[in-house]
Length: 208
Ligand SMILES: Nc1ncnc2c1ncn2[C@@H]1O[C@H](COP(=O)(O)OP(=O)(O)O)[C@@H](O)[C@H]1O
Ligand SMILES: [Mg+2]
Image 1: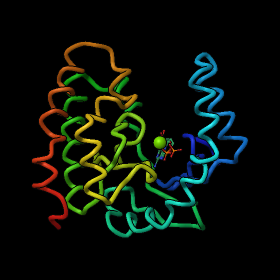
Image 2: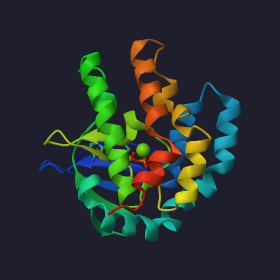
Image 3: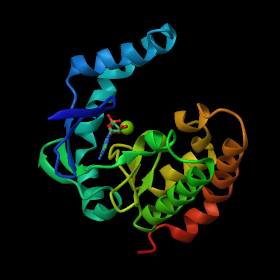
Image 4: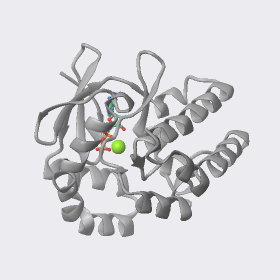
């Protein structure tokens, strides 16, 4: 199996049948990932290393919630099948961050519009992504549909997502921060500002 991705929590392998296998990373893998990410930012590295034991527990503590999300919105998260605790298969997608280098600016704007629609669609089921890290955690499936590929960043509590909206969390995601200034970033800023509002949350939340 070829490894095609990894985050802090998961290793991701191509199953060569349109699906991927996602297995939790070992402690050692997680610690080395932090070192790789923050080697030139020692202050952040130390903070992250201190937090690591608590973060590690997150997957285990949140697993019940994750399974509820899987039952609730399988079509928006790549039809996961649980293999064993914390391990699952999912439709293979192209992460938006990889498309960024291939698509024209107009096409990326379309993807951003699809992304806000996807967010509303999840809200209708009472599920919300709390980190808005769209380049890393959103992908396009073989039908051209966007899905959430990261299952650990959801909440099913309206007060929690409202808190994130009020604090403009979407402007603090690495995906947004790292975008170079320019027309595309302004487009995304406006789109998020008009989309990720309390009014829209009230309009869509739990409407299915
Ligand atoms: N279904 C998928 N298809 C293709 N690549 C994926 C898929 N799921 C994850 N990846 C890749 O692996 C990375 C880590 O997966 P993710 O679920 O975000 O794990 P983590 O919780 O560790 O961040 C993603 O950012 C993406 O690049
Ligand atoms: Mg991720």
